[in-house]
Image 1 (cartoon, one colour):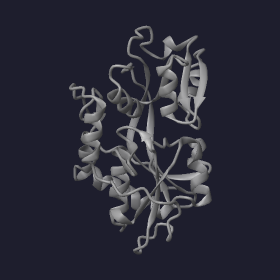
Image 2: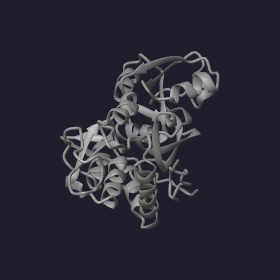
Image 3: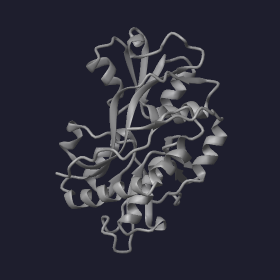
Image 4: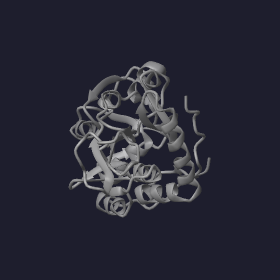
Length: 281
């Protein structure tokens, strides 16, 4: 897969201004779509993040970012106009329960496809393949990769597997501190409570661009995070419809446009080719 790197780094205001030009800016609505996502003229409820610059950020009652744009495109391919989308916040810790309880019809919120999650929910996609990276304070030159986290305090959001990829899978002796979301991790990093934050490079790029004087992305990516569209269990037909929409989104150039809007002002090398889609089960 090709990747594009754009070296001009702008401040947070410019990144947000770019994000506001993107599609998918319907007002945030209440939860609970009326028709369960049948595309018959009612509404569809989609869970996105509200605290991730470049991906899903609540700007004055309107979510903006790459995931929001992808969600809007998919919804329109399913027969919903942008004003028929009801947005709700889907934090990492409540994504499975939202799908199981019918709070949302789908979730597009940096939701990595894993075998463990597939036991309780279905996934379409992936619509993008990210990698994991590390964010530190801007003046911290001691951490350049996961191996340097031994003995340091590492933050990740509750419900995310990112930190465990380092402490469990890579067996690196970092002390794990979980927070409610990544905004809380950034607060802890800023006040020195933790030494580093780890998650997908897309998420970290957005935060680094907002706060270039405070935070530094290590830019030493590892692992693979396949972003899927979370669906209630048993959604095989809907999964196939969404996979067709994802393919079209990449073929017509919309996906690359959304990535440019979200990350074009950062030093982040985003992928530019359609991911290999998983089979709908």
